[in-house]
Length: 355
Image 1 (cartoon, rainbow, N blue to C red):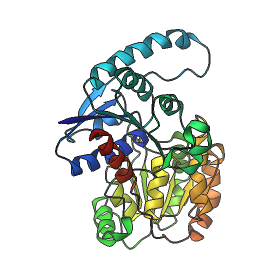
Image 2 (image 1 turned 45 degrees about the horizontal axis):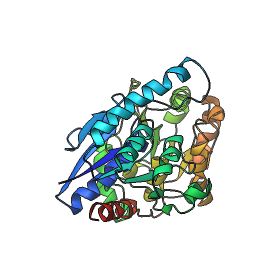
Image 3 (image 1 turned 180 degrees about the horizontal axis):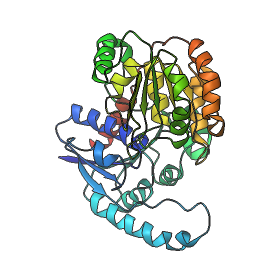
Image 4 (image 1 turned 60 degrees about the vertical axis):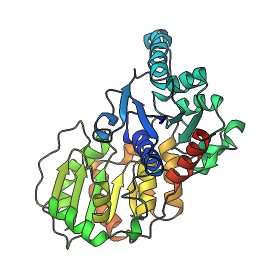
């Protein structure tokens, strides 16, 4: 058996691509044993259930962005996480990292053990953990061409696209009408109406949730189905009329089949899934990190599939005044673009393992 350690955690944006690559590897070889390094508090805890992948949680150690007490204790926490990663990675044939807080100590542990490393960067602007990891490997894959332009080390990165769930990849070839009807029936919604899908990622989006609830009477009057995912750690408001609120949507393929328009953040996975499904969208980038969500949205906007609004401008009042015209003028669903990113990354992984 050859052990591959997948690394990423915190949000589904780091976990889902890792699982997509892991599933591809398992489909190609019965000799692959998968481990996953993540955090105890991230969505990976739930997403890894019943996958058969061994989960190894390590300490979550964010890079300090300003000097305070946490800056002083950070080296000690990082060293502890590094030791935890060493124990997990020892004896493995390959580490594939997808960014997030746990990736940096895992990259250092892999380098110490001389274990080969593959990095996949989901965002248009690479995060700190993957920038750190790129010191130790030339096997770098990116979802956006813009990511190759940050420095000379990244110029040779391979543009793979984003690994996404098989149920969402090649979306146009699937039986979307039946998927749509089944999903709406599950929520007791009218399949003859158009559907607005609203979500803010796996952990939700406070500003989106607040604004939607402030504007809900206007939304109810639109004669659209409204499906609102508020985030795993948030209590969903009461469903009523044509509005259904849930904490989390596990069947995103069904949700996308049902949706005629999407309001969401512009995380890397969300943008890749929108590109794959062809659904028109209003994107509300979260203004954090290095501005990666704005950069992620750029391609969909250039294609005419999406528009965007700043987070601070997306208010209940704005939504009341504009949602009607936005939905009336929205383009129809386009044919989605298939992603073969899992194949590209997985093939390189098999090459390394078979050396």
